Each structure stands twice: as structure tokens, then as C-alpha cells.
Amino acid sequence: MKMLQIWHQLTSLGFWLWFSNPDNLEIIKTFATIAVGVGVFLNFYTATKNTKIAQDNAKTAQDNVKIAESRLLTERFSKAVEQLSHEKMTVRLGGIYTLEKIARDSRNDYHWTVMEVLTSFLRENASSSKGEPKPLLYQVFSQFEQLKEPPKPDTDIQAVLTVIGRLRCSQEYRHLEEQSLDLCGVNIQGADLRRAHLEGALFIKANLEEVNLRGAHLEGVNFCDARLSGAELYSANLQNANLCNAYLQKVKCLHSHLEDTLFYDAHLEEADFQYSHLDRAQFCRAHLKDARFAYAYMEKVKFTEANLEGVWLNDAYLKQASFYSANLKKTSFNDSNLRKACFKYARLEQTLFIDADLEGVDFSGASLDSVKGFTKAQLNPAIELMLSQHVSKWVLFCYLYKAGTENKNF
Image (cartoon, rainbow, N blue to C red; front, side):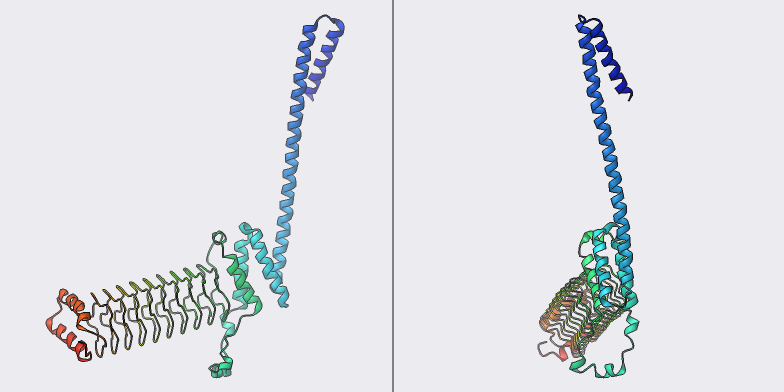
């Protein structure tokens, strides 16, 4: 307002000078120039001020919109959570998919919250304790073909598992998670988790029997004491996973990655790991009777005190593998690469080593009764190793005698 008053005064003074002395043109021009400059400045100042006011109004409007959207999102989230406990399946499914939409629309604020809600829903509604004990008649007749079809999870349970797998497909979403997914003790027997992203999840004491995990990402997952019998793990990635004391009888794990995975005390009877990568995996005290590892890559794997009776390890890559004190009765190592492997104190009754590479293998203290497939060419590298370790001639004689008595090619 002051600038406008000054402009009015300058304009009035210029007109007065012109009326009082029309011949004084220089003074009049000077005042006119000043008046025009002040007018231009006033227009610029007014425009700038109006622009700032408009920007402030726009910001206020945007803030109001964000507040309204946040309030609406909160209401949607609360309603979706309430729908999860509804008695009708369709309503529960609507709540599940609404939560998925919220997690995608507001990933920074709601992604991990939604994941916690969904995992909590699974722990409450799919507890492994609810599936046991099975009826006696089912246990008796489950061996028949008509009852061999594995049970499937309820539709809402499968929907939650699918949503969790979808929400974690992007690495960008997984970075938003504050901790591991807690799925301890859930019963999702027969579920479909193909290509699901469950990295670092906790499945301790969970029931995943007959679950389809083809192509799933299970790096670093904790399966301690879990049940995965009959599960399909074709082309799955279980690097650094923990399967200690887990039950994996008849699991199908072909073409999979299990590097650095722990199998301490696990039950792996009749499991199939053919063509898989198991470098540096640890099977200490594991139960592996009749399991298959043909064509598997198993460098530096450890089978300390494990039971590998009847296991098929043909054409496997077992360089520097350790079978210390393991039970290898009727195990087949035909055409396998066993360079620098350790068989100290192992039980090798009726074990097959036909055309196996035994360079640098240590058989110290091993029981070699009825070993089959040994030839002089195979044993020479092992003998050289034993001589380099200063094994007594008497022990070496007994070793060669045992190896040769049951081998016609020796």
C-alpha cells in the first residue's frame, strides 16, 4: 500500500509541475520516468505476491488431499482387517486382496504392516497343531490310491500365500521388510508356492508336506523341525537354508541349488537330489537311506556320521567330500569324482566304486569288507597317500587284503 501511495504522489506532483510550468519539460520527463518505473515495480511485486499466495493455497490443498487420502487408506485398511475374520469366504477373500492393493499403493507405509497381518492370519488359521492327530482310519487307509491325493489348504489360506509370494517378487519390496516373515508352526500341506519369494522366512516346526515349491526362492529360510515330506522342490533355490532335524522323506529336489545348506540330523530317506548343486552342504548325522544324488555337484560336502545306506551317488562330483564315520553300506559311487575325499572310519560294506576316481582318497580306519569295484589303478593313489601318512606296512597289508579278496579285478 505504501508503494502505491508513493506512486500516486509522484504522479500528482508531475501533473502539478506540468500545469504550473508547461515549459519545464525536463522535470516532467524525469517524473514520468520515475512514475513508470515505480508502476512496473508495483506490477512485478503484486504478481509475485499473488503467485506466492496461489502456491501456498495449492500446497494447502495438496496437504488436505493427502490427509484425506491417508484417512481413507486407514479406513480401507481397518475394514480389510475386519473382513479377515468374517464367516463368509468371499468376504475374507475380498479383505485379503484389498490388503494386497493397499500394500502396493502405499508400499512405504503399509507394505510390512500388511505382511505382518497376513502372516498372523496364517499362524492363527493354519496352525500345524490343528491338523493333528490324523484320524486312525485315515492313517490306516492312506496307503491306498484313492486316499493318496494330498489335502489342499482352504481357499483363503492359499490366497494369502499367493499374495505374500506376489508382494515379495520385487527386490524393491523386500527391502522394505524389517525382519523375516514369521510362518512358524503353520500347516500349509499341499499348498501351491511355485516361484514364490520367501527368502529368509521362518518355517520352524511348520507342515509343508506335499507343497509345490518349484522354482521357489528359499535362500536363508529356516526349516528347522519342519515337515516337507513329498514336497516338490524342482529348480528351487535353498542356498544357506537351515533344514536341521527336518523331515524330507521322498522330497523331489532335482536341479536345485542347495549350496552351504545345513541338514544336521535331517530325515532324507528316498529323497531325490539328482543334478543339484550341494557344494559345502552339511549332512552330519543325517538319515539318507536310499536317497539319490546322481550327477550332483557336491564339492566339500560333509556326511559325517550320516547314514547313506543304499544311496545312489553315481557320476557325482564329490571332490574333498567327507564321509567320516558314515554308514555307506550298499552305497554306489560308480563313475564319481572322489578326489581327496575322506572315508576315515566309514563303513563300506558292499559299497560300489566302479570306475570312480579315488586319487588322494583317505580310507584310514574304514571298514572295507565286501567293497566292490576296486582295481589296482584306483587304489594306487590311495596307497600312496597312506604311505605318505606313514601308515604301517601291516595296516597297509590288511587294507589291501580286504580290498582284494572280494574284487576279481584287483
